[in-house]
Image 1 (cartoon, rainbow, N blue to C red):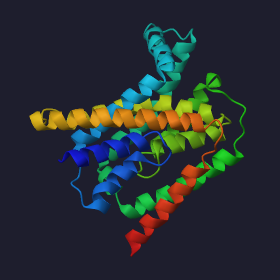
Image 2 (image 1 turned 30 degrees about the vertical axis):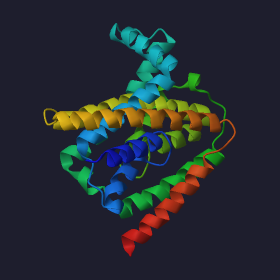
Image 3 (image 1 turned 90 degrees about the horizontal axis):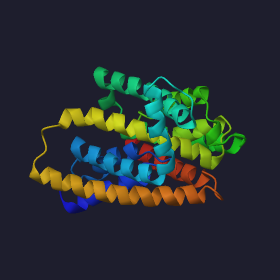
Image 4 (image 1 turned 135 degrees about the vertical axis):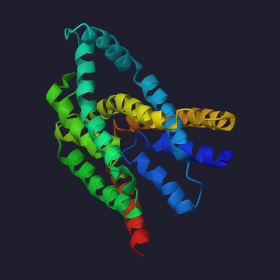
Length: 267
């Protein structure tokens, strides 16, 4: 794969992973609409590793707190803020793991990659995001996250395995419905992405382990570095903008892209 293709894939993944516009949908559309070579699972894993590193770095204080809490959980204790945060993240991740395994074992995952489906999910879940953001109360902060809310957001996160839905978009929508502020809904969504990306990357990595050669290792390095830089920049800008701007610009983008995709699919 050419360096240009690798950079393009890394930039798309990095920029769209944490914005509520569906990174998986964009990566599926890239070869379908451009005629470029499909990036393959190894490059997908590399792109996710880069974005994972970015979100861990950006939210390091929360990540450090949760990691310390994991040690308390292993000892059977939920007596600290970190232990409770870690437990909430585990609860929120279980639905997406179970649904992901179901899609993979049933073979349905390969049937959910059509342009028409992505067009519809772009529009439908864009409208859901707009409704949740505009009508949801803003009474809760991330520190008030509960096990019930974590499960609620986790169930919505599982829906994001349908391309075009957007993992961040649907979990932010769920967070706003539950009453979390825009920045705190995004913060919880980003923290939820860490175990989810690790789980999905591990699942894909098992399938491709042992197939990498010297050329693939070079490509992986390029994609990790570029997706990390792009994701960190996109995440930083979004979190800053959310202090003054709603999610409406992302909704408008989703609807426009969805309409274009439906036009392409049906004509």
